[in-house]
Amino acid sequence: MKVILFGATGMVGQGVLRECLLDASIESVLVVGRSPSLQRHPKLREILHDDFFDFAAIEPQLAGYDACFFCLGVSSLGMDAARYRRLTYDITMAAATMLATLNPQMVFIYVSGQGTDSTESGRLMWARVKGKTENDLLKLPFQAAYMFRPAGIQPMHGIRSKTAWVHTIYVVAAPLLSLLNHLAPNYMTTTEQVGRAMIKVARDGYPKPVLESEDINRF
Image (tube, rainbow, N blue to C red; front, side, top):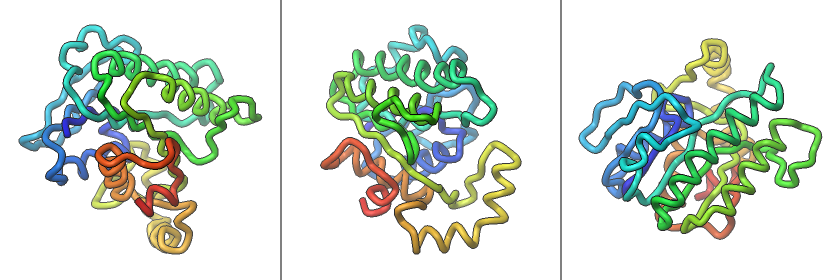
């Protein structure tokens, strides 16, 4: 497969990139980001792009791909609804709409989160926005689209969050996270498991479009 990856510098994206580079079934990986991933590999190519609301300038370079792993996201902490929607829904749909036109054979996988509100009418703002994003992605003319809803994610293999305080929490809680990953697969997964599951779902499909942590771990 030839894969496009968004969000490669984030914690989840770092894990997905690692697994793509290790997997023999992945022929090439195109990373689209605002800053370099700092990774070097024969099958890795990167495009630095500033405007994630408009991809017209790089459109020709986004054709001919089999899968997209969209791991780009922001925390809603301290953010009003309009800005969170713009940075979550608008950016995702700008990329996905163009990719669906260029690559109708593509499998699109979106990293959402446990608790996402598919009804778009619940009390939690972030869950409503994520729900609308998922719903509208599923309407696009891809070969298939899948929504990954991990709960807690344990970073593996030296992967770390770019946010200092989040990284500190992960370091302190590492032993507990490892235990929870074994004892509570409904609520925990790892960056490695997310990456491996994305590749397998893109290659083989899955019986339903929304995967919770338990589905990710099992698959």
